[in-house]
Image (spheres, one colour):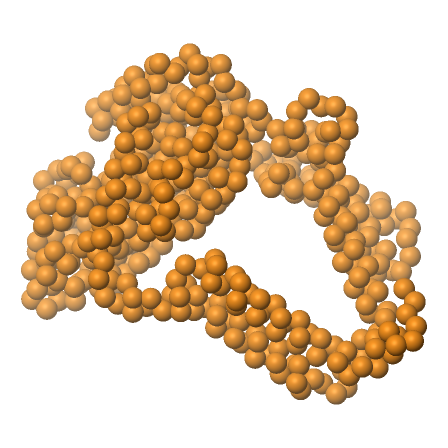
Length: 315
Length: 194
C-alpha cells in the first residue's frame, strides 16, 4: 500500500513538473466553489472537505464546499458547467460520472468536464459474509445454478449492469438490489437482506477481521486485502469497475487554473501528517493521484468501456 | 386600485370568482403545465421501464401519480365548490398583490444590492469574487432581509412605521450572528448562487 501511495505521488509529481512553475503563478480570482456530488457526512464528502481544508491552510485560498448530489454526479457536472471556467469552481465526482453515467445518459463524458486530478481509487470487490460459506464467486454461481436465489447488492447503475453481465455470462439470474451507497450494501449483507454485494473498500475492516470475504476482484488487478481473489475475467466477464474519486472543472477550464489546482491537491495530499491522506488511506486504500494526459486517457477509456458494458447488458 | 362598472361587478359578483373555483383552476393549470412541460423534458424514464429483463417503476411514475391526485382535487374544487365559501373581494386581491410585491422586491434587493454596490463604489473586482468578503457579503442579506420583514409587517398591520424597519434589521443581524459568524464555509443568501 505504501508503495502504491509513493508511486502514484511520484507519478503525479512527474506529470506536473512541467506545469509547476506556471501553476505557482496562478491564484483563484475569489473563493473556489467546490461542488460535492456525494451526500453530506459520508466518506467521500469528508474526504473532499478535509482536502479543501488542507489546501486552504497551505495556499491561503478559500474553498467553499457545497453539496450537489444526484444522477451519479451528473447533477454536479451540470451545475459545474453553469460556473465560470476561471478556476473558481470545481467538483468532486467519480470517474464513473464521466464514464458510465455520462454514456448511459447519452452525454459526451470526456467532453463534459475538465478532469483535474484523481484523489483515491477503490477496492471494488464482490463480497459476502464469511458465514455464508462462499469462498469465491464461482461458489456463488454454482449455488445459483443449483437453484439458490442469490440477492446481489449494488450501489450504482454501472455496478447493477456489471452484476447483470456477471450473471448473464455465467448462465444465472441474480436478484439485483440497488441501494444508496456502499454502506447500505454492507448493512444489507449484515442484515441478511443480500447474499453478495459490491464493496468499494468499505469492506476492508470486516475482511481483515474475518467477518467478510472478498469473492472476486471487480477492479483491474488484485485486491489489496485478498490478492488471491480471482478477477472477473475468470468468470468470462471482460468488464471491470475501476472507479476513482475525481476532481473536475467545467468544460473548457483555463489550463493554468487546472494545473495550479492539481498541484495544490498533490501538495496537500503529500504533506507530512496530512489528515486527509490518512483518512483516504483508511477508507479508500490510499491516495492515488492521476493527472494530465494519463487522466485524460483514463476518462476516455472509462467512457469507451461504459459503451461496451451498456451494449453487453442490452436486451 | 378603484374598479368601477363591469370590472367591479366581475370581481364581486361572478360565480367563477368563488375562491374554490379559482384555486381549482389554478391547480389544474399548473398541474397540466407540469405534466406536459416538466415531466417529459426533465425526467429521463417513463412510467415503467424494462431494465435487465425486469419491468420496474420509472422515475416519472411518482410525479405523474402525484399530479393526477392534485388534478383530481382541483377538479373537485372547480366543479363542486363550497357554497358558503367566502367570496373573493378586492381587499383580498390587494392584500395578495401587496404581499407578492414585497416578496419580489425584497428578493430582488437581496440578489442585486451587493453587485450594485460593488459597481457603484468602484471595487476593482466582481461581486462573485467578493461574495465571502465583509462588508460586501452582508449588503444584500441585510437590505433585502430588512425590507422583507418590514414589508410583510407593514402589509399585515396596514401601516408603515420605523419599528418594522428596526425589527427587520435586528432579525437580519441575528441571522448573520447565528449562521454566518460561526461557520466559515456557509454563505448567506444570495451568495451561494451568484
